[in-house]
Length: 106
View 1 (cartoon, rainbow, N blue to C red):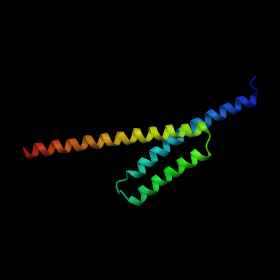
View 2 (tube, one colour; view 1 turned 30 degrees about the horizontal axis):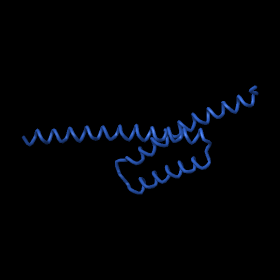
View 3 (tube, rainbow, N blue to C red; view 1 turned 135 degrees about the vertical axis):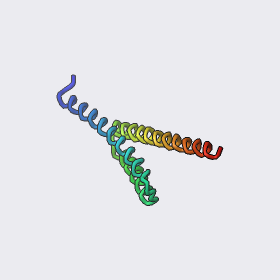
View 4 (cartoon, one colour; view 1 turned 45 degrees about the horizontal axis):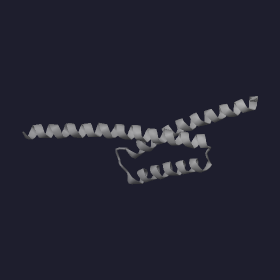
């Protein structure tokens, strides 16, 4: 039968998993946010991505299975969601500019 300590351990594992999911989402969002600054400084871009990969590597090395899976799921979802969202907005703006240029030339 389950004891009180088993219940607390299970609750702690669920909270750790949810916390790493939120942390992965925020790390992915911050990585893309810092990478897409208007100044486009290459030193900042390198530092942000190396920091993200170092954080992911340390999480894989020292994290629990649930924490690593949650971090990976959150970071991957954030990078895909905000990465594709920004690309679609830029593509729409570029297409609109090309259409306006074609109309101006005609």
